[in-house]
Image 1: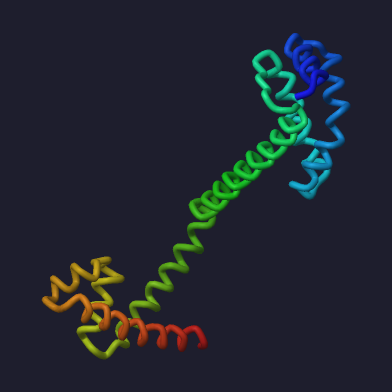
Image 2: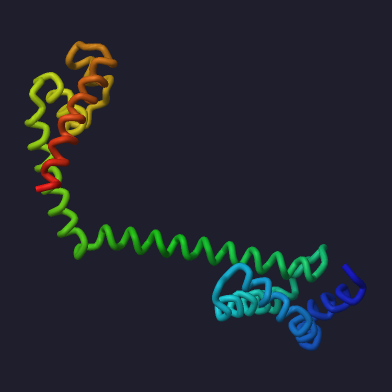
Length: 181
């Protein structure tokens, strides 16, 4: 850190508005250009940099910068961008969750699930081998594990897996035929 930067930071800590203005004028444009490499929108870049300078002024009394001011501010842009990405991801997840759990979207989804469930049950009836059909129903409709099914039916675990595989093959074929109709 240069002597000039140390003086500016010391003055900033004391609440000197001229020191803040000097820092602002010296780095604002550079930080906007750097922020534009992170976000496509000029307004977003300006908002990010503005938030950094606002935070710098608000936290001026407790600032402890041991690296160059330039490096500190560039790092702040990077962290601000990371924060913005996390905030956007949380918002996206919230909207997705809200959409799938809202009463308005639940009705068509429930109808779709009901119809699909019925199609799967119809397809399961097409499995001619009773053992395959029973294994499929225990696994997917009663939600038992492979191991539980093997113990319940007194058969080997691999036999369960083979039966499920055969049943799924028949069911997929049937569902493709239903889909084409």
